[in-house]
Length: 547
Image (cartoon, rainbow, N blue to C red; front, side, top):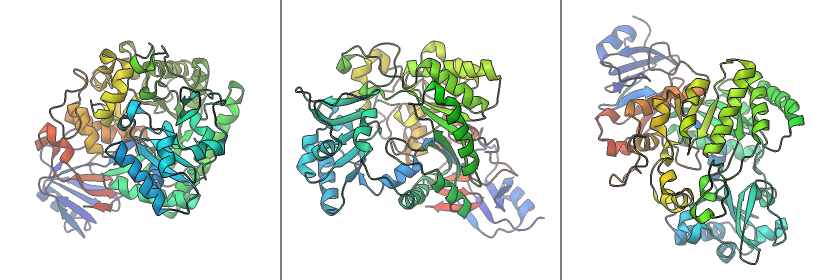
């Protein structure tokens, strides 16, 4: 018999990372690693007494969730700003802004976001609405998708944006009939004002990271990939905040940072940019943080007609536009090839089917030039994928990074996305089942603060294709649901694989990064999966969340 375990979890079913364990009910942890897995009697025979025992009768122990696409520092900072994510309609959104501004009369800017476009007529809040509650200083509020900004007149005047201001490349200024800005800035047009927003200090960013880490742990998340580490959209580079947290031991999650690739980088600058990222990777990586991925933003979002499509938008977009590609195909192919050769995992934002094809073409070019490098490339979002591109994921070894909580006919989807895609194309969104059947490796990411980091809610939608709490809703897409085992595997083993981890399992010898759910999801009716909660989260053998 070995020394006493640090922690023993008892009375719960076990999901190993690939399947439910047939008999195990107990897991022991010692010195940050799993010591034993089995029945209570089997584990007692291995570890004897425990310094701490937690009983979760009827629950389930599984590998800690990894969020494969999230923005924790941004989300943590926004939790302390004007948070509009919980507002139910136009009236409550404007009231929340008014209350926040009134409570902070000395704040030089009103910052925050999370507003929903479908709460406003034609999906577009106006600067006049903001002027009514924030007349005396600039306001800059990001939408829930973080691709558009709602600004007031003071912000536009400060930035010198007026009727004569042209739309920037890959951006759009919403305008009134007379050409004056209406108060919405889409994609890279946000930078016209965002460049003036006071930068978040490293002190505030560190506080935001700590706040976000606690929040993510509360959902059973023990690791993540930060989808943008670098100066982006007015946000300064906070890579050093991660490095310091890792060095001080306050970073309890296992984190990979995806270093930002500026889309304005020219072909002549690629070599220098890659060399710079190689230096940053070496300087930032250490402890529980590694900066060995790179993020490329290839297109926008469907609801503003900026996602790159193979065929024109319908309805409200009416102009026949097919969206935008931030990097021309030839340039994207060269960037991905050079990054792959430098040993980076490339993480691409691709929502429209044209963006997905452009990214897959780029990975095919990298494979042809570099061979199989073993880098763990992935495409995030994948709202639309052409049928002919589905098998290419498995063929190229490129993972599908799914934001599963979006894959349902909720109010936002029906009011803003269906009209611009058209009913037939809208039903083909988020083809999870088809990707799985084609052999693609699946991972789950939340894109928080764009949407909730509740992994169980995402699994609920992946399994049901319906919004949590709305079992009567029509499912989105035929045959695109995932089995529960597949969805759990995606949120644990699949996402961890993207972060370079092949040891994300509940088995002896594996790192003790564990989530304990308050119920066994295999015993819960599918329409009630979203009610399951993380009762306990263990990171590196330490309890970091206990409900």
